[in-house]
Length: 256
Image (cartoon, rainbow, N blue to C red):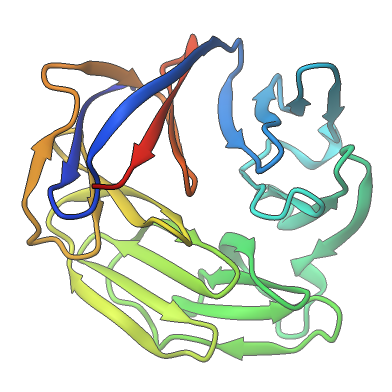
């Protein structure tokens, strides 16, 4: 289901959201744009990477559907296949580097979400234990980051050093040492995204997106009256990308 988005922002953090570019994209899912301005999408269960001059693709149909793609490190891209509980790492031309089979991990890891962390590790949410863990796929070491989380996991957002969990009752931010940096009641968010430079953004039940470091912040419209049918989003240090199923809109983020 597509959602209508009202572009909002905190008064103290940003001056405006300025539409920088609009480009057509024919894809089943928009993943995002990396630091080198390459665009990633999923088409017919294949990962596609395009630049101004080149196009690359990766697919392994024997592993089922692509559940998630993490491009935070464009030199080591993570593709997760939930049907087989397997993560595949790709290089910058989408050649396979290695696979991590969570079925073969000691004590077995039934994964609900997986994202890239630092030092040959990934953030994983252990579905059976309802816990966030760091798993080092080189050493096989597992580090428990959280106590069992109450409620159902709705979404995750992360970078190398921090992981945000959105449940149906709370929003919790952890660091790699297992410390809770922030926790607050979920006011009705349905999805979250993050950028190391921009912090956390969230979408609520009214399909309003917030740039937020605290849910009580006040917001004002950046593009008054503008509504965009939203299929996918991505936040980077400089842009907010919005895909409506036909076009990718890039909004430049500017500070006051």
